[in-house]
Image (cartoon, rainbow, N blue to C red; front, side):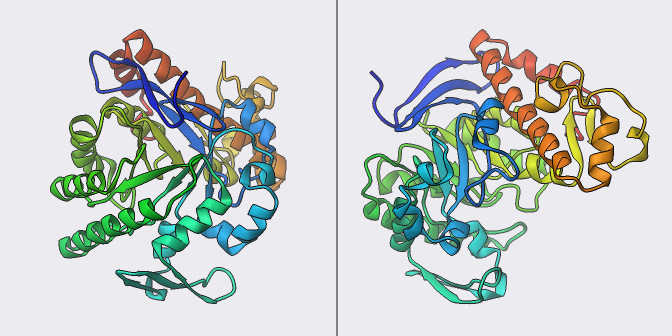
Length: 378
């Protein structure tokens, strides 16, 4: 029987660095590679938990910052923790909320002890988080996988600023590791370092010296740089330097082509608000490219979003014309159907990728994807 938080590698592709695996958590197994839908405020916007599960989701995210502000970690704990509170019985990951904190810009003050910030998007109050405070919040929320508090520098940033972020994140990682006590939660460290591979390796080495993290997040990507620039350091970091026997989680990335390329580098886990956020503005992912359902060209189109797609929108017979109507009239059903389609698209993409790795054909899978006319757009 597999141990809790063990990462089992099922198959490795002979032509790439892709691998298929299983990460064991208290609320079930997570097959990798995997895309994780984001339920920021304890809900994947507009969808019932069973709908998300039926789309193929094995694990979902929630956001520590937003849940700490409303309704509060103590209330969630009183309600039995996130699983009970949001009626999701599968694995959950909570990020530390650090990205949201540092997005407050001028309202943030950093020190070795922690971060002080003003909650400008809620009640304007001043809050201080130490790494220990953050661990306390995430332990109350009760997710299966939680993330250390870290500093995420944007792009571009001066090298001294990125170096400071690495040192601070490493210092905080050690404090998070010592403060975390729940044995039914996996605490992941986060590799920072911007677009500098030497800083990335320094960050990874410092994390490995902090303690035996069961997995690693890779933060500080998709923060303003192009994806080609991102892969210059991400590819060697993941494929050559990160521990083989632990999951690698590329944080906040959800473009389909980036997922395909990321898996080839050895990335196991992805998350992003992109599929649901783009759905809410009327955009759908297809292998032929992105469809903007607001455009008048769809008004008389009786085709589904994508032929052969198994999502509720396509398999349910909803036409592009109907979805165009819903989107233009700002009907909730339009956003719900498009959210289901986009999530299914990414979940199915990763499930298909996983099978290709098991079959030893992921190199062909990547080439076929890159041959798509719309690959650069997706």
